[in-house]
Image 1 (cartoon, rainbow, N blue to C red):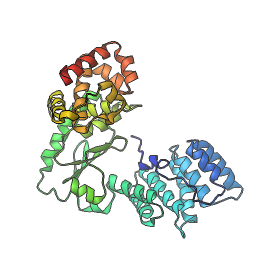
Image 2 (cartoon, helix red, strand yellow):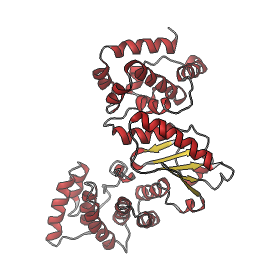
Image 3 (cartoon, rainbow, N blue to C red):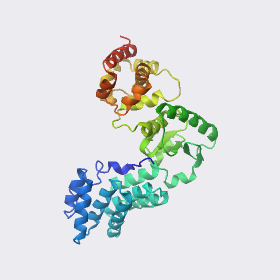
Image 4 (tube, rainbow, N blue to C red):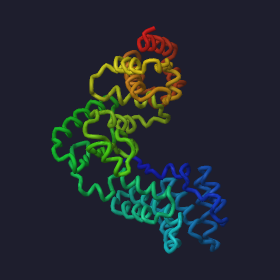
Length: 361
């Protein structure tokens, strides 16, 4: 089955570890190891502390998280539940993060109700802004928030659609058929797709999503088989991210190639090079020339109305000139250096020709 990586994978970066405001304690050395990704040592040393009778909520939390981050979810639950129990009265950050990780473990066990309960407890504890936000985004992102109870579920061969209750007039059968047709084309091109159905959340508009606390729509969580989009968005862009990840498991993802591939497969048939040229022209004097190599290294150099069609047009060049098989070989590491290894001297020729077509020089 596809490995599920819930939002807790970014907890270290967003403040899930104790900071300077926390009192010193026996778990301090464990958190230092944890911040370095040395999860096996966290577990080993944490269990040693517990065996000596040094049982605190933090030590249990550190061990539980260390186990969970090694995909040892069943064993992790033992320590996470103990951490939550020891902090159940005060419900500090330890309780909140224990519940966030318990939700992760329950999700891994395909226990949606258990995941919902744990993340709801973490959210409602309001112990720390980051834990509250993480729990809430898991509930929203995975379709477990109470607001989805009013939505309609529609299942097809490769999708589990959830339609906003504001889309009563939408022809769900036709919508599903169009997505199944696109799925067939995209999965055949990549040589496979996800093991399970894609959870496809269809919102009425961005205003509805914003009011619910969601980010900008039109995004996928490929490792979760999840897509969130507006009803009128292109049929295959975001599902391409899911299919490509499942089939290729890229070790390095780069915006130019990753988004360009999704644009290339969006099934619209649009001339993306012409679209990029029009977008550049619309920028007027602001249309500073940015080389494809520079954009490859820094995806933020151009606005999305230019960079997305440009990426789609560039991926078309790679496929047309180098062929599907070589592109898939390259796609696993989307860096410019890897492209030079795969395509050799031809790459620079294609880059020069593409930029001439793009900028008209």
